Image 1: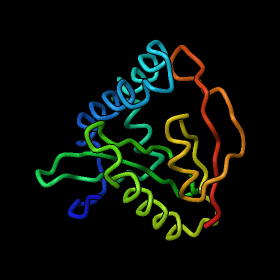
Image 2 (image 1 turned 180 degrees about the vertical axis):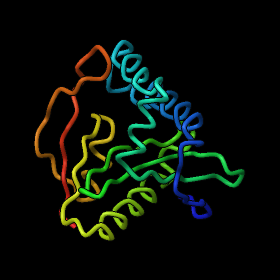
Image 3 (image 1 turned 90 degrees about the horizontal axis):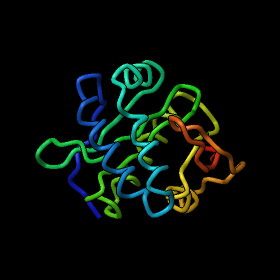
Amino acid sequence: MVTNLDIRRLAAQDIPEMRKLFRATVLTVNSKDYTKEEVEDWASCGDSVEHWKELFAKNNYIGALDGQGNIIGFSSMNTDGYLHSMFVHKDWQGKGVATLLLSEVEKMARRYEVHKINVEVSITARPFFEKRGYKVVKEQKARANRLWLTNYVMEKAI
């Protein structure tokens, strides 16, 4: 488990690094649960800088940084208790980065005085969230770019 990571708010200037991390993570980590065509379509959702700017307008992003200041994971929370993103660099999987980020965004939700966190998670991420007290509300098909991918609506009371 990692202990010496910095956590900081992310801003628009972080978008290029976040795009790279998002794409690499989806194409590698999520390829065990989704087809090649599905992960390629999903990864393409991060191509538009304008889309990232829209996400930044609606969500508060935080990043986990390694000792050199590189973003190795990011997550977000909005004032309604919606957790939009949780992505960890493929080389940092299983080292506690997502757990640290989740702890931080749950603290944000408490500061926003919400009583329930909602999140839509991939097949890959479902066990991680279940271990941390999130319950599946429903399975659904969510549109990536062209394709509809299976994911889960989950929630946790805080």
